Image (cartoon, rainbow, N blue to C red; front, side, top):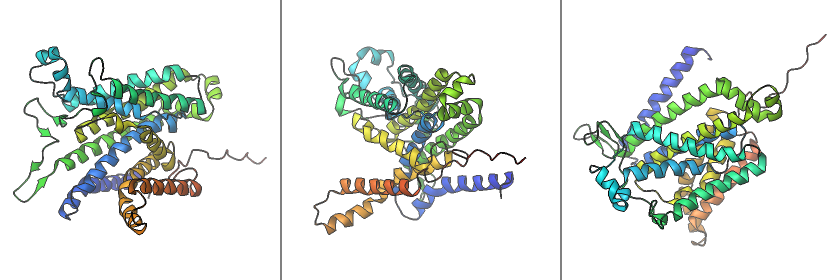
Length: 371
């Protein structure tokens, strides 16, 4: 069962099933709501994969990862919305046709800008560990959110708490006549069309597959082994000649790139961004996805992200009847948060190492050979 042809067959079957899933839902009459939930869940998978590099591989507890998500989202929102052109006339004169940044420029820009932000975060916290590192990174995430919230005066750059709207959809192809516009549906025939949300779902799925391949290759590389050595014992890793400073900075930078790309995709998908989308609760949820799934184990991280991203929407069907039973005295959103917390506590009590932990991590040392 572990042969390479079997693995390839399973992988191809899963790929076909995931690609066909939104079409099956559309044919079954389930509507586009569930496809939208799946698309957002894939964005959380991207975020969890990025945080897994920092927390799962390098062992650096980062509670401000949502800051890189915000950096990518605002970068794309500023490039793809008319806000800059309305605020700065010289930009409108320089680009009379607008920027309309294509996807092949958006992904490197978002990844590079987020990586710079990750290195800027990592540089002052190199000597911090454990709780102190968590507190500083938490503060960094809140600083970015407050910064976006207040960067309206004296020069209006982020539009403050009102956010940025009228954001262009993602496109592939030349400006003005793209081959694919993810904001528009594709008419296949008179009786069948592919909605915009399905196109975005396929785009996010492709990004997740590429990210998984990158993370898997990193895990098996010298860099990945160095990160894991730092996670297990930083002093021993330093004694073995590993440059822990550079490896930590690389972990922060590499992890942040996934957050930046995910943020850019979120801005294009939603068409609107505001500081409320990047609160502390988002960071906590991303950390919970990595921890509950299984730190350092790619299948576990993906499982944890999918479950926690979809669980709030599934619990809508549970919170509603419970609210009716109490005569409306319980708020449905608060009740859903309570149910999520109970589910997380139950999982951690039953599976303290996560739902799908790495089989190698924490393995006992081999017994000495008998003489």
